[in-house]
Image (cartoon, rainbow, N blue to C red; front, side):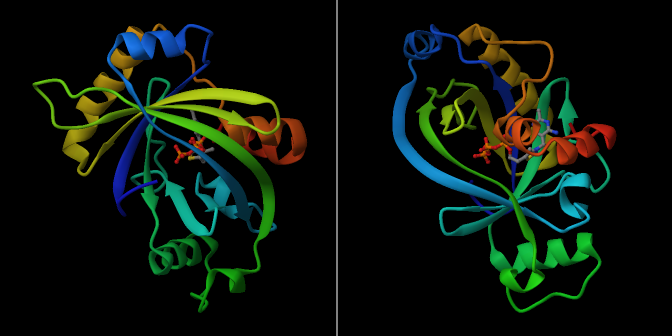
Length: 210
Ligand code: V4E
């Protein structure tokens, strides 16, 4: 959701009733509350998502999240790292590569299908900077309109060298917030698919994407 080419290191959690209290106790500040609609798109053969490429329209902007190295999953325990691309010409370039088709003049011309669409109310908290680090940590508390809530600790870095530290930091913050779970917590898209697109979900599990 930020600079083009930045690496998002994230870990999801199940938000208990105490999480806000813990956030404020750690000195976190509520930065903003935003409401947005995400609509996710893929080809008929599900070629994007089966390769762990996540193309969405958030509000009026296209965004693409994909693993840092093709064919590798950006995992560290139950934490993830994904690149986020927000420039439309770069998104078109990546998508045409994964689909194996020539680059069209605009996103619409790919003729992709929407497979998920939902509204999120997000409260974004910022944690205070520690002396020893320059990277900001954010915590999002999300409520989706299909009655699903999830939290996320996120650190954004610019280079692969910073990723290991970011993973450590994300785990540490989860532990301090009392929301650290060993196993991966499902996010909004996975949960939406499990509820509404059972066959698509099954294929993603079979392909080890979920
Ligand atoms: C499903 C998925 C991706 C799409 C974005 O999903 P998510 O991070 O849940 O959405 P959101 O709204 O929090 O995005 P943000 O605002 O933070 O950019 S990107 C990668 N995946 C796959 C995936 C996976 N295989 N495993 C886990 C634990 N998470 C995601």
